[in-house]
Amino acid sequence: MSQQEKNDMSQYFYRASAADFMKIPGSPVAYWVSEKTLKIYSGFDLLKEHAHPRQGMATTNNELFLRHWFEVERSKSAFGLSPEEGKKSDKKWFPINKGGEFRRWYGNNYFVVNFENNGKAICDYIDGTPGVKVKSNGRVINRDRYFHEGLTWSTISSADFSLRYSPKGSLFETKGAMIFFDDQTETKAVLGLLNTKITSHLLKATSPTVDFHEGPVGRLPILISGLTVNSASRERAEIAVSYAKSDWDAYETSWDFSSHPLLFTSQKNGALGAIYASLRIHWQTMTGEMRRLEEENNRIFIRAYGLQDELTPDIPLEEITLTCNPHYRYGGHRSEEELEALLQCDTLRELVSYAIGCMMGRYSLDTPGLILASQGEAFRDYLAQIPEPSFAPDENAIIPLTDQEWFPDDATNRFRDFVRIAWGEEHLQENLDFVAESLCLHAIKPPSQKSGGEAALDTIRRYLSTQFYKDHLRTYKKRPIYWLFSSGKHKAFECLVYLHRYNESTLAQMRTEYVIPLTTRLGSYVDKLEQDKEASASAAEAKRIEKELSKLYKQQAELNTFDEKLRHYADQRISLNLDDGVKVNYGKFGDLLAEVKQVVGK
Image (cartoon, rainbow, N blue to C red; front, side, top):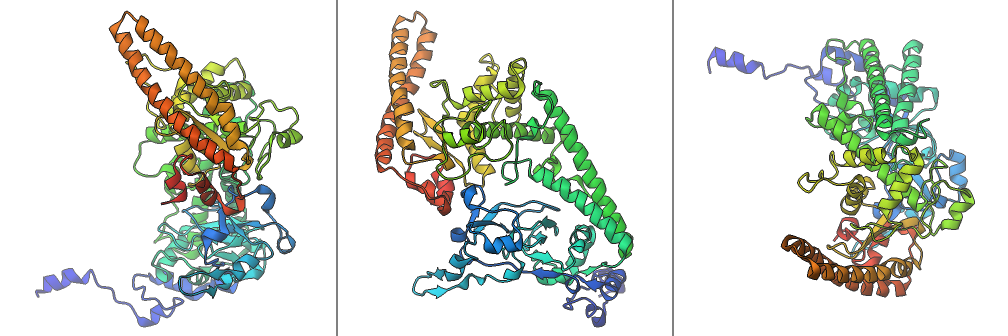
């Protein structure tokens, strides 16, 4: 090998002292670590010397013991309990941290765990592995830390390390480990520190894989002393947490959701387009403030750690983890125009979902937060809370989703009423147009101009009958709370039923109030079209009618088959147990429900 070749290859080799590796806790072979980084390990305290990083419980059967919070009854769930209240509580379902996607400061709060009687069911669980039965004891470890305030993170992540504040009231699982502090004033100060670029930089030495378990995290060198740095860090973290929580709670999948953000306005009579534009400015401001805050945080700690030559404080927009930030929410290499279109479309899709919730009695235009969210609650329970609603829910929580207007109380007509009541009669058509235009940005295809376009209400009907349920499944992680009963691919009849208001007579009501009347109406409409076809003098018109009749004949046959199956299941008077979760309950109705494989599996 020539000298030149040796010189060229030398750039791929590092010289490092074994003694240097000893300076890093765990002595990993991190030959790339700089001298300045090594000094940090020898000069700073380790996190575990001031805090308690802890692994959470392993239920050994999450399918049995964990649920999404929106699947179960709110009356059996408890949020925000102190450790003392948690131990004494007679509730069944409690929040549990379980990791999740890359998100800083606050969020990823989806799951609850069955911890009734201090976890007796988990501890008594017998693992029924074929051929052997072993009592698992659930590995319910670190019980003394349950319900305490702390910090949580995703122990398995393909993205950077991201820490979130967890207020009192939660338990934690293996993938959602937590850090606890004897001195609670240090909680958010350390949160501010660990959500900087420094943490990811240091973890590359101690945990170069995607496994950020409590060991490497506990060995992070932290600047715990220095009142100025820590008090400022605490203040910045508190502001960041408030932004992140406000953002998280603006969506239905938060248990603290109160109302759709388009309704947080003093404009009771207004144009939705202008209201959305104002909301968008607010989101941009919040995203910009969060970015400024995080970069300032980075700048201060990078200087305090002496890493100015190795790290920059800059943060790309896609790492500002607010859902209202389209760069984070959608990612990828998209243009600003595409990002704005996606955000506007999704915001209006979420408005439609909120309106469906108001129709079901889950929400109300008159009172923030959940109204009916426990098993078997009825219209009278809603009126007990809101005696004179401005927008009343459906009395039986059965909402037709049909591609034609067969019922005056179908989802499309009720959505029109919702928009009129929420923002006034004066702007009704303008607001319906804005909803329809927004949905056509991405959710559904715009109407064909060759056919002369489409009225806004028809566009909204098309979205509700073709796309809404797919969006609902995605939003609710394949654990839907509004269930789509469907006659089949020809969509002769479809309706939504609210899981929490379902009762043993729901299917019978569906049949007598909707399916049987629709059978009669379809028959009458077919008779009329057949007469119109015979009387038609235009070949083109006759062909159009013939095409529509062909569709209606298929729908009639489908509806008759559906009615027979519906009667069979209605006679069984099927009951649900929400504790079993959506996956189990959804499978009780055969193929009456849409997307069974997505929810139940094979």
